[in-house]
Image (cartoon, rainbow, N blue to C red; front, side, top):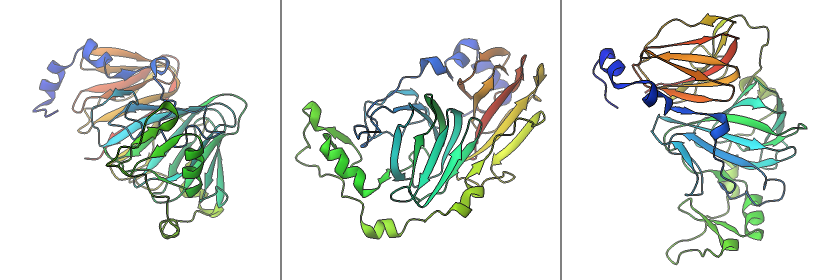
Length: 318
């Protein structure tokens, strides 16, 4: 949305309009067959979410909570213990904030090149063009909040074994990136062809991750961190920069608040722990743990918390 002045922004937004830019954790609508591996034993219990942006699902019926393009996509994955997300690669940056659960991230075609374990509050950022997958290795259902670069991050590149297992369970991925459910009676259109199985040449072109690469993949939670903003991804971050967005933690003590700001770019805030209030354009919006809000660009805002909170803030970079 083109905005001329900060004053214009304040006039355009009220509490009702801003509330519509919040996605509550309890209101998340999952897709149970978002990707080609969704019927593979061990992966069939995962829930995928498109929270903000056009989305990356292979299922056109995936529910999109806020479809407004941001230059990046916000999503999520919820998985019970031992549930797996199969090995795949992306063309743009993929970042996960571990909201709950204990997770293992596996690198390589078969997931055995390197592994990284992550707990609540950890932030995991994957290089582009490298096979990765993840498993909930805890005893409880876990949730990952995710950022994927670009409005259109490109198609997922799957490891070869994913295609074979999908066919065995009635799912066919087309060259267009669409998913056909033959078990539900759908047929591959006459003018379409299945996606070719990923070639050995394509696999050889991917980056091979090693155990020594862990420091460029994960930023560990710091429960002793003082109040303030901590860049994680971006020019001053502890992890490599990502095209299209930056990511930071904001730690608020009890009764604390950030300074007032009017971001030039779109800003998305996620409550990792605690509860917070967003003071924006004269309105006050309450956010609970797991809630996500997209703050309009140019809208005067500040974040506050009565009980203390940790926020994850993603900002577009144009």
